[in-house]
Length: 476
Image 1 (cartoon, one colour):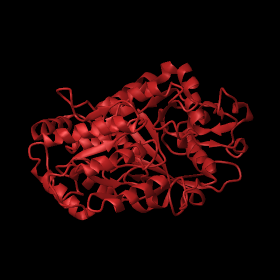
Image 2 (cartoon, helix red, strand yellow):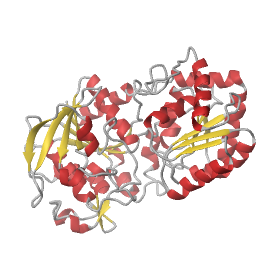
Image 3 (cartoon, one colour):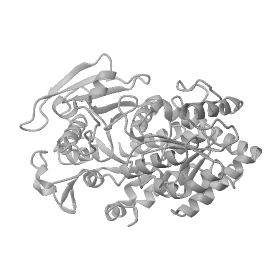
Image 4 (tube, helix red, strand yellow):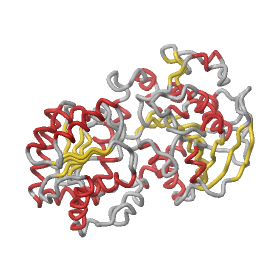
């Protein structure tokens, strides 16, 4: 089948979160299963810089009154998956992030930037395709490509079927209704049975209404988002479309995330020899300015520092844990209040707490390999990848039983346990679970068993990619 995978970010070209990891790995897994899969991404500066041997395959006018744009063709580095790049310098060649400018505000023309991406995706899935290739399936990801199913359905021509994957329903792409005309959307679709959501034009609502099938990134999250608590206002629509909603757990790129071959590690290891992991812990402690102490349980966080991730709850637990002999390594950025509170904690506990406020791909691998226990106390987590990275690296995770965390981590009480799971979203429950993990760590034999269970767990993409192929076949 011809599959167009539409995404606003993809590793290793540009990344702000887990969507980029999925966008880099899933198309490669689909290609390995014999599918004709191609990516469509915006032509941000890093994308244009990193892709080699680009060539122009089409020039087109997407919307009336907008400059002509080019469609470039190239190959993804390492995987060789074909990629189309929407080269529209006026909208994508900007310093700072793909969605926000330096001070943290959203780009004011995001509706046009991602409406253009959606429209081109729909063109590639229709008779009007500007290249000699027409998709059978247009696979959209999150709100940034949410208008593509609407454009497909509103186009009076033969067109592809569409899949809308929700990576995080909290991000919806809601804009003023004045964007309807510039985006060439008819007024008739601004309705509760269309793109309208509480008076706004909603890219995500459009995708959920018009897509042929809806997928979430874990089975548990597929159920959670049909509830008032977790649906962020979309639960009614999702409940009505329940028969079209399914959950397919994400996998991880097992070549990129393999402690035996990881290019970011100088001390590599596998399940048959964990000694280098201990040496890596000591090296990490030294690099981060922590007291070099093999026996001190080293806790790790690699995350966006946000309320969703439960890291405010963790702050309430940490003084007791640190006073009890634990250490903490934090890597990430996010809400300024949480950043400052973690930096203050590092000042209060010199040699016991390290906080690095930035995104650093190499350091994220080193933290995952060097810490003893990985902390991921999310209030909600559509899927999550870091808990699977932790298991693969022999770093058992502490997680809350929600979304993909519930689907991927088995509690240590089970014979095949891979981590430590708690239920209530409160600091006391989190504290008890971390203490349980530390006590297990100090019981070397039991902890080693949990490490090995995690390292041997199949967390790759092949099985999940096959489930996507099965879904595509039922549609096409």
